[in-house]
Image 1 (tube, rainbow, N blue to C red):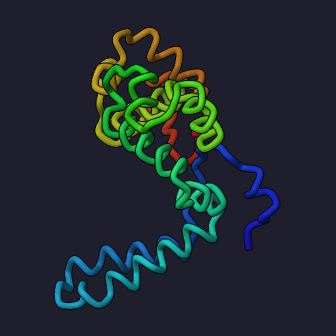
Image 2 (image 1 turned 60 degrees about the vertical axis):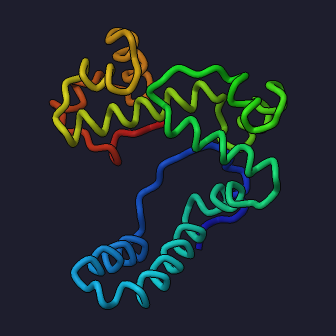
Length: 185
């Protein structure tokens, strides 16, 4: 069982390895593709198990905080979705704050409390992880990955990539780093 005192202190976005039970539930869910007659009954049960396992896992406290039905949390969820859908584009924090019905200062404060980072830092993190995924799984060049996630400068992308992952984009592919082993954000 996770240490709930530790979990309560974690407020930032993080990545943890998926446990065996969670992976088993996901695998059973994916196998339903080959059993369409079972989907209607089994999918809701497996979805419930997956949610249960996620809430009991290392990120459970953060997920519970995000899932809170408090209106202000819903506003931050809406902002997270907006940034996630448009991470490669440019945006003004003021526009997102306005779109969720908050002042800019209140939005910054609540966004950071929910994610552990400022909105533009969150966008940069999304960009870098997507670029890393493209480089490692789709054999995309560093420059193509940089431009596809919204960077205007390959050198800036390379600096930020190295700062986040500890290696340059090309060193990561040559050394065989995986997303799980070398991510240290």
